[in-house]
Image 1 (cartoon, helix red, strand yellow):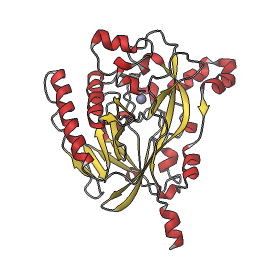
Image 2: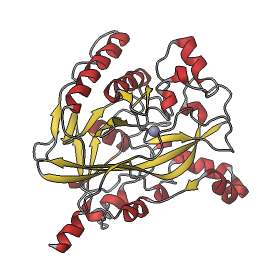
Image 3: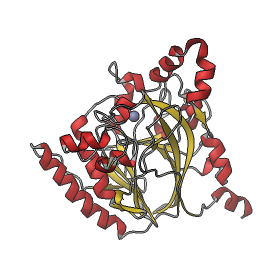
Image 4: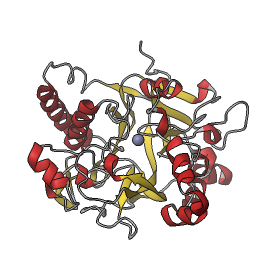
Length: 364
Ligand SMILES: [Zn+2]
């Protein structure tokens, strides 16, 4: 079934079709590597986006054993994971579009079973524990106000996957008014269907009711890799979840690839990592990536997807040994979790200047 729509300025990409059909896993790895390199060259010939900015929202504790699956050595039980919001503006056949990547409504995600259990396990110390392990930097709406973007200017929102997400305030649900009145959610059909019917242990990471009651006219279900317009592609990178995808954005610093398949650049170049256990695991096994695996829905696919992401991203202009990847949730060092700081950090990024359409309209 195909519903990648024609009525939107969204164009199907076929570069990766068939790359995962080979019977042998290592053949699939080499197929996505070759297709990724070719796609990269093709996309770099196009126009970059007008604006790209990533901003910290919140830092949350996350189990180290999932963050660096099988390679976490002697780390403390948790790392600190920094969730970022990405704001992207790009040209399309329907004019300028504004996309929010990973707008986590973190104030309304606490019902996610993993976080709920963490709260409960702190018992009487919950308030102190929360103050210690959660760092609340800014909400999505505060970040948008800071850069001067009006909620009605948002055309699309997307998440590399729906773990912990609650989109009901953004899009409206059960008849409530949406905060982003013009935004549509871009999501892979596999991820949407998955979130509607979770098996136990998968359900530990999805926010109950996180997509319930959202009107379907606010949701664009995708069945393929797509270009959204000039300089933005959504590429299926199954593995971390069934319907995972990566966001590829053409910036003045090359193609930035975003997902949560890896929690830091260390995960993509484990041989260079100084995090205890990571380089050793890579050396012993020959693994070229370390998975962020909390639900392990499709581990082999995730490995292949991370190789694919590296091939699309190419070298990082700041350090050619690293891939040009900007994780949507990036591990950050924290005194409470010693020796978990990544060897290489991406941090917040900013390119270009934001166009404020509502301000332009008001002036006209
Ligand atoms: Zn996840």
